Image 1 (cartoon, rainbow, N blue to C red):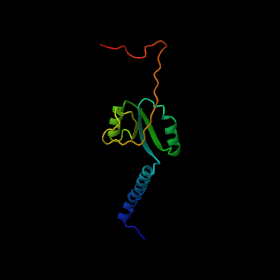
Image 2 (spheres, helix red, strand yellow):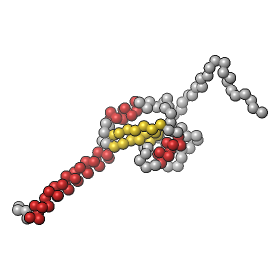
Image 3 (spheres, rainbow, N blue to C red):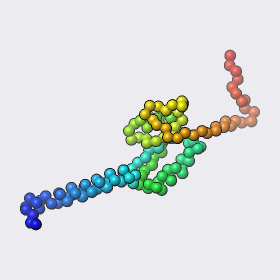
Image 4 (cartoon, rainbow, N blue to C red):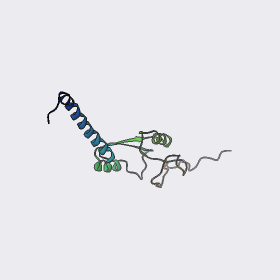
Length: 130
């Protein structure tokens, strides 16, 4: 096959386009296969039943190309972060009611025993008010 002058002029650009489609295909495959990307995790003050050091470390060992970001905030701030596209992907919340806000789905729940510690001799309850 003999290229025309126009064919010779087009050849470098055509090769570049083909290489670009390969790069684009690989980029999409990497994200859909969880090879690369970003996961935003939100949490209230560290809950004791969730090991916030071990969970991301375990995930990172399986998918080292995925960047994990952790954000600590209040429940209303985390809910806002979940609703805003791209800010948070999941969060450990402590909602005030049993129902989650609209468009927020729960995957698991847990119970924690909370203990109040005080100095010896501290009153156990507030004094009665009139």
